[in-house]
Amino acid sequence: MIRLPAPLERQLKQLFPRAQEREQFVVETLEKALHGSASFIQQELPGAVGGTLHLFSDGGSRGNPGQAAIACVLLDPVTGTVVREHYERIGIETNNVAEYRALIEGLKIARLYHPNKLLCHLDSELIVKQLSGEYQVRMATLQPLFREIRELSEEFAFVSFKHVPREDNHHADRLVNKALDEHPSPHYEKP
Image 1: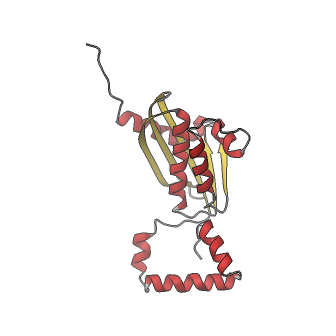
Image 2 (image 1 turned 90 degrees about the vertical axis):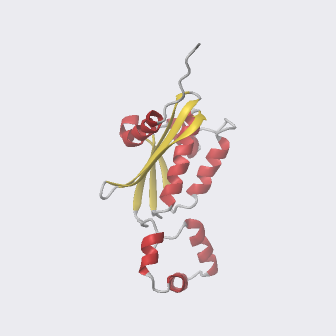
Image 3 (image 1 turned 135 degrees about the vertical axis):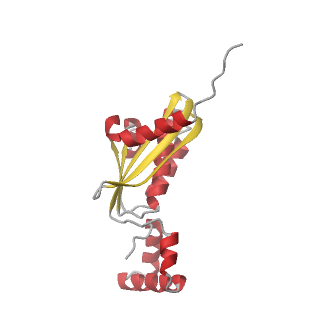
């Protein structure tokens, strides 16, 4: 059986309290939607993995604020293979905004794979402590990003946030620098 997003799972449990009825409903609905077409599954689903996935995210800016970029790497810990990676420039931002936005992008990507367990690794101790409730989020610019992460986290059966040293987050860090290096900020010469 495939893993459904947590909000959908909760709705189904309300409609069908018994697991057998829920499963029957899901099977019948999928059969109707697919009409026996296996090619639909291959084209439309990104490769639902289930199980446990590791998300490494990083954000940074050159200057604070300055030109900023984000990166995230989704890893299958069983095989050690990269399931997906993403990096991009996000304009002029602070380091903390970039760190939050990297995690948000990583969570959005991870939910496509419906992991039963998502372990998020960040090299920003501040953000991990804010997400764990140890620190308050006082900066107004970070509060909506914090709330978005909380909302996205509800879509996973289990999600955790762990601080790791920068050297253990080297893949995501390298992608942040790659995004910044590929599109350097404009250089202005004085007349």
